Amino acid sequence: MACTDKEVSTATLARQFDEMKARHPDAILLFRSGDRYELFREDAEKASAILGIETRERVLSGKTAIKTAGFPHHALDTYLPKLVREGMRVAICEQLEDPKRKKKEKEGVETPEPNKEPTHKEKDMPKKKKEKAPQEEPAKTVRASSDGETPKEKKAESQSAAQGEAAAERKPREPQMVTVNGDKVTHGHAYQSNVNPQDWYFTARLNGEQLKPQKMDPADVAAYEKKEITVPELMQRYYPTKLMPRVPEEAFKYPNGLAGPSGPLTVDKFNVYKETDETRADYGRYKFYAQVGDKKMSTPASREDLNAYFDRVMTPGQLVERNFGERLHLPSHYAQFRLPEGIDPKGVRVAKDRSDGRWKVSADLGEGRGRTSKQEISFDDGYSLFKAKSATREQIAAKYLGQEITAKLAAPLSMEKSASMKM
Image (cartoon, rainbow, N blue to C red; front, side, top):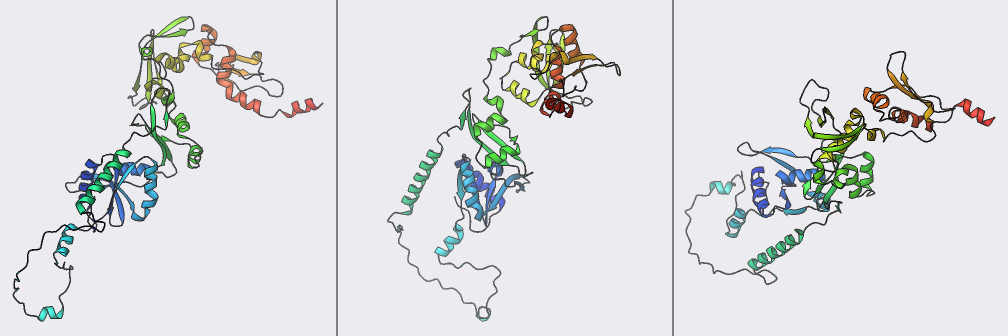
């Protein structure tokens, strides 16, 4: 891989990159240009993500723009190990002598220095006609190297070694983990953002396909830098649905059955769409749409539920149960809400507030803890409690007052209670 000893243009390097990339498609190419190493096109983007260096767009002849990146030549010892550790194969294109200049030096022709002024003698000396002296034709010989090998033999040996090394590097990479579905996870790593250096992202490849990078929690970044967290642990944290067992494809055939408050229900239709009505508050968000019997419903979908749907680890029935359980008054929706131990269910009160006429829930936590605030309940929850009988007062209290009850139980007892205990 040869470049001239003077700094070549970006267009020339880009052309050389395309030629060498066709011969080494699986390698990142580093081109020496003056006192820098340059990268182009897809190599620039890969190196930017791994090394945290900045990419730029340069315009070539014909107004064609390409991505470029680079770093000082003295930083090679710092950046090269990082690329190798990430599983990248790297080819370095170093500078060699200009072939035209080398040929002139061989023939004994002095290369004039640019802008050199002639000396006084050169100005005053009369010009003489050059006489052509007879020259002997040089004998055709093969120059041998110091170790006895001809240049052709040495080149063939070098190419053979390079091909052997390339074949060894092209062996399939061992996966960093294998999921319960048999999917192979490779190239799992964290990298620093070029735009906001305080942000870090985790990404990996699943069966050779690049996953969308996920922004990391600062605690995970610190653990990653200290090598206290593994790739499987990061996968579990940022791509949990990729590691969950997939449900059978038959489960996505309609209708899906659900246990309703007064008998079985069927999910006749379920899909995902993006809200396009600009007047709505959830404009631009992805939403679930479900048709259960004569009810047609939609709601904004969380990222976790979207991943669960597209990764096929939850059925439409399960997603309807999670996202529309309140509207359908499903007993399974309320089964997830439980009061902490020690709370007397008799202390829970659901009643209409006289001040505004709305139904609210509150709970008496016992001596020394006092009573919680009053929280308004939805129409669907009220219907489930009083009409459908699919929810209990304790479940309604746990749904609306759970966090407040937990906080009050964790707080120290009031002074009056403490004094009575001492007595």
